[in-house]
Length: 401
Figure 1 (cartoon, one colour):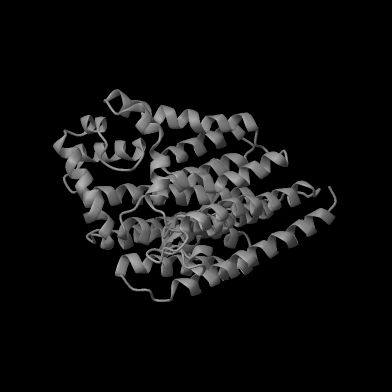
Figure 2 (cartoon, helix red, strand yellow):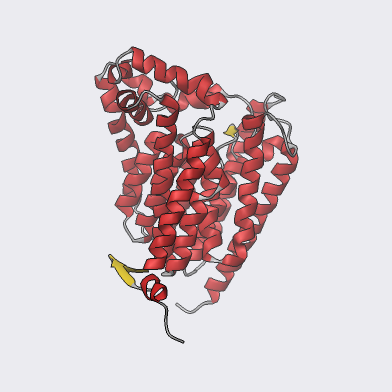
């Protein structure tokens, strides 16, 4: 049968760097980018409680103070880098709602490219890498967080994803520099640190001295605000102040504290239980590190992704004071996890379902499923990933070097 002209056109090969695409690949990516944006654009007019309760007022104060000069006083409990973005937006747009959401949407696309690079680096499968990109852009967690909720969790997680890409390329310094940038935006960056420490223990890419980049970049990120008149000590202690703001074991995140009755507003023994939980988290991660350190195992890409997902999930599940959005990084890692082995895609979908159920009480003021049940489901997912990690370690332990 004679090949059609359209087939010849679609299957024509175009090389971009070291990756060879077909025209049909690029057409699919173009359609993906367009429709992913249209989904977000339709959600732009929605004003969440976080927007009209906090962000709108902060933008008003920034405009009233003249933009960047507002950095000289404390307007929000955010760190300096995001305040720089807010100040910049005050100059370039009058629509604060759309402006703030567009920043998150931009990082949605940057994150999708990072996921593409990671999956391609690990599998050398262009198809899987494109599907991972699609998984992120069409993820309900990502769409709801930015375009609907007007939150910015995609910013710090984007830098984590590019840091992981640097890690996979064997670039320790680049990895930790990007982790430092991520940390300058959000304290939740610490969720990935246990994985990096385990990789240091296993002598895989990471050098301990490069962790110094994290405080160095945090200090550098605060200098412009300090020059505008903000108290330097105040800038350095923002994360300490944030950690003392909410005493509850959990703020609607389905972790162990939801099962113990430490959810807002059912405060019982949050201080005591939270303190014990922090030490428990350290010990759980320590047991994981000890087990892996004592094993002579070949660190495959799938094993490292599974370990990253497991350690982040354990950290968020067992640490106190977790908010409803703090599992955001888990879902992004789960996309990579499921794309590398399609048999595990149901696990990816289950993690996302947990996040959607977790978001709903804040977004629509309804518990579709009681928080305790969601916490049990999340525990089951973590157990599954832990079992899978153990199986992979056993398999690679027996594999020849």
